[in-house]
Length: 226
Image 1 (tube, rainbow, N blue to C red):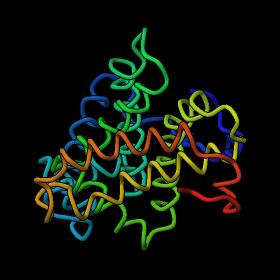
Image 2: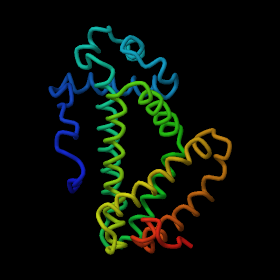
Image 3: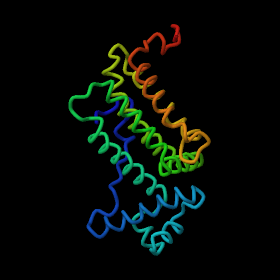
Image 4: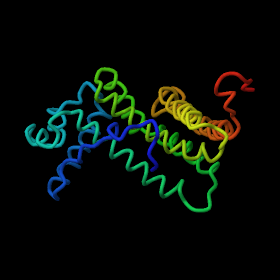
C-alpha cells in the first residue's frame, strides 16, 4: 500500500506483534480472540486485562506478560483487522480485469456487508466508546481509518484524476464516513437492519457516481453540487 503524504512514518504502528515464537503466537492468538469476545459481547466497560484473562482461562500475569496494557491489545486487534481487510481486498477487489469503478463499488459493498454483521457493529461501537476516553485508543482508531481511506483513495484518484491529493482524501473521508454512519441505523440488530440491502445498493450507486463526477470547485463549496 502506498504511503500517504499526510502521515509521518512515526504515526504508523511500530510495536512488534507480541508472541513471535511458536507457543507465544498461539497464546497471543488465544488472548486476542478472548479480547474480541469480551469487547463484542460485554462492551468497553468489561474490557480489562483481568476479565480477558478469565475469558481465555489464563492467569492475569500470563496475559500481562504479552500485553502489559490493554491499549496494546487494541493496537494488535486493529492491526489484525486491517491485515484481514487487506487480504480480503486481494481476493476480491484487486482481481485482474476490474476497472476502478467496479473496484470502488466492491469496496462499498464489502464494507457495508461487514457493518451488517454482529462482530463489526458491536466491535467498532465499543472501540469508539473507548476512544472517547483514551487518547492512545483514539489515535489507534484514527490510524486504522487513515488506512481505510488509503484503500478508497486509490480508486477515487483513478476515477477522477482532476482532483488534487487533498480533494481525493476528502472524497475518501466522505465515502468512509457515509458508510460508518450507517452503523447505528442499519447495523446488526439496529432499527433499520432489514433495509441494509437497499441502503447498500443506493450507496454503491451514489458514492461511486459522486467519486467519478465531483469537481474541485464543488468540494471547495464554490460550485453547485446538483
